[in-house]
Amino acid sequence: MPRGRPSRASVYARLESQLHELNTRLGGLPTPKESEYIWSDIWHLEAHHSTALEGNTLVLREVEALLDQGRAVGSKPLAEYMEVKGYGEAATWVYGQAHGSADMGHGELLTTQEVRNIHHLALAPVWSVSPHPHATREEEPGNFRRHDIAAFSGGMTPPPWTQVDADLTTWVADVNALAAQIATSRLDCPLPEALAETHVRFEQIHPFLDGNGRTGRLALNLVLVRLGYPPVIILKSQRTTYLAAMQSADRGEHGPLAEILSRAMIDNLNRFILPNLAGPARLLPLPALIDRDVTLVALRQAAARGRLDAVRSPDGTWQSTRKAVDRYKKSRQHVGRRRGQ
Image 1 (tube, rainbow, N blue to C red):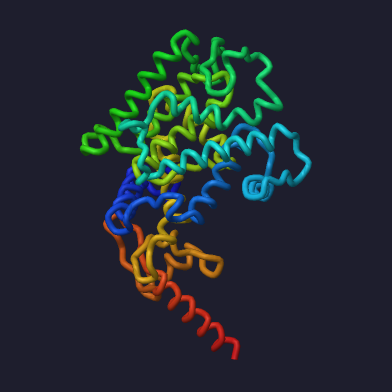
Image 2 (image 1 turned 90 degrees about the vertical axis):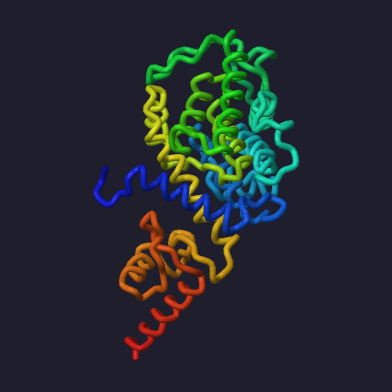
């Protein structure tokens, strides 16, 4: 482990602490209807990064124009715009299922039909202009593959197509069993590792001819938001690390992927959710309090030196309030003016 980098166990502990904060002190994950502005930022980033992981070249500004205004800014191939459009539509449906939704899959956390619906929403737009060259009519968006798939470079071989229906049915049942274990605190491993195993198992089944990565990440986020957890965004800059972690998970080593998922959930909590739910006097982790005027390093140093009113939580992270940070920033400005006199 690199010097100064938190251990995997401490990352898990931090996630658990912040999820507890979200659900006990802040009223839980808001629905899109309650906090549209929170979800719109997550929506733009997820559609951009998740499609970029698969090779899409639209930049964030182009993604925002397409999703918000329906405008194709730039001169990229039509298929790339349609990929983002489809992903955005699928993500909108997924976010609409956030904690508090009245429809919970007819009493289940997830159904096979919902997985197929995600695939259809995400793939139908691009399929209309650039269908998979080897697909039959029976393999169009929302339908399982009817081809066998060769082994991947890491050695993982998806099951024969004749086994996909049964394997995905089992996977969905396992997801619902996992939800029951979480609800009754009966998990036999850390939550992030259970989520990592769930995610990689879907990709191993590879139920569709194309779009399995996008569908798998969306299905994982559907599970997360229905559990009242923040969705995950895997950044395009993490592509190499993410794929290596997936290969490790294929071999039964779920820790690296679990850490990526944990950090992604923490990032979304600190960047979008906690700052918008908490009042100015509520304690928050320092990463949730940074802005263009003050860095995380500056806040940590100020907390350690007693210049920022802050407390250290049981997991070792500093917490402060928006009011305290504003006071600290004003004190820095005052010192700066005195030095300039």
